[in-house]
Picture (cartoon, rainbow, N blue to C red):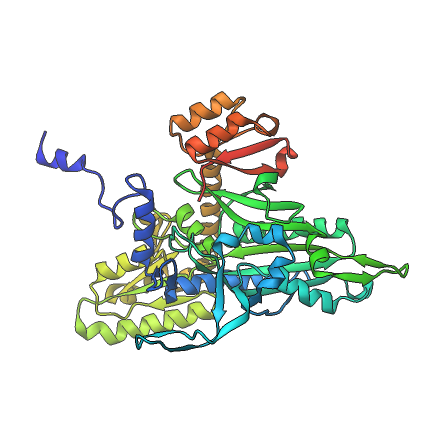
Amino acid sequence: MTEAAAKSNKPPRTAITPTREENFPEWYQNVIKAADMAENAPVRGCMIVKPYGYAMWENIQQGLDRLIKAEGVENAYFPLLIPLSYFAKEAEHIDGFAKECAVVTHHRLSMNEKNELAPDKDSVLAEPLVIRPTSETIIGESMHNWVQSYRDLPLKLNQWCNIMRWEMRPRLFLRTAEFLWQEGHNAFATAEEADKDARQMLGVYQDMFENYLAIPAIPGAKTPEERFPGAVETYTLEAFMQDGKALQGCTSHFLGQTFAKSCDIKYLSQDGTQKLAWTTSWGFTSRTVGAAIMVHADDDGMVMPPKLAPYQVAILPIVRDDADTGKILAFCDDLQRKLAANGVTARTDKTEARSSDKMWTAIKKGVPVRVEVGAREIAEGKLTFTRRDLGKDGKKTATVDEFLSSVGGVLEQMHKDMLERARAKMKAMVTDIASLKEMRDFFAAEKTGGVRLDYSLIKGSEEFEAIKKEFSVTSRCLPFSDKGQKVIVAKAY
């Protein structure tokens, strides 16, 4: 074999090592690092979301906030610290979070006998305060005060905030002790209205997943064992990552009258009697950033969904002669202004890095479209631009006017293509089977993805419990498309 032939058989060089196939968890962490999205914080289990990663979360937040408000929901804000007695009202609910709760017991620091700063022994709080793991109890207290009659219903509230759940096995964006989310809490006069609302908000989340994140997901109900503590029904979107593991994208809960009873949320009905309200809660977290990475990124780095990219176009000045620098940068600035006028966000890389380094920075950050501008391009009145998801296959040349008029369509098509590719991958991830033996064989063979089978085969089954324990799998959801007759089982994040 010639040296050239030997080289041609070598695997292609990638910007991210190891690759997805070699070590998916490490690849995931390295994509985040290469894109400069986040890093571990000095506090164990917490993370620092860097500007590029936070800009993506801001775009998620703004897009979802518009969808939520379109449902007649209003934003509010409730305290971070919740009295322990509020949780005690709903023992079943807190049991689901008890091991994850961070508790404040003192209200000041002082120097102790060792001359060290420590909680002041004389500042013990009369009642411990829990740093919110979720806000059903404290929002329920406000609903108790705000709801007096049927005229006050429905009451639809949402808050954007941070949450604390003590996490022993942290992973950036996916599992951290502190994370960002929105939590919605609605109250209704009837069970039918509340259940309809819980399903409707799940539909809002699906809109967000598909039309913003370009992530397909399977809508369905959680099995009784996987329901949110205190809920009558928990509805979920289950997505599949490139390594075949499932990820719970969000949840929407029909809470029945569980929290209305514990918080005494009553209203005077039209017939003059006091009745308990029916409530829902629903949440969407910053782990969706992690989902976007694991669904879309490749071995060269992040691939940003166009609607959520911190900026959609990277303008790369190609300077080979210092005499051309001013002219090229002025051209790039003008192009950036024209893109902004067309509703497209762009950023010009004005660093002194080499042209190839500028290109790889844009690739690793997953900027949807990159444009190269040099003296030759200016002289010819043309641009070379490349779609991040297609790489060299997506490289085109156009005049400035052609580019400006077509870039919106390019971004829209990129979103559609990313969604369709992800949908095809998800479909291939779910294998239909007919028995628990097939399930055992599937996971024993370490096949990629999960299985779908009749729910009746696992309901109350000791064999299924053994399979869960042996292979670390869980029931993900009862898909709406199967009318609750089938269940999807998979390993999950």
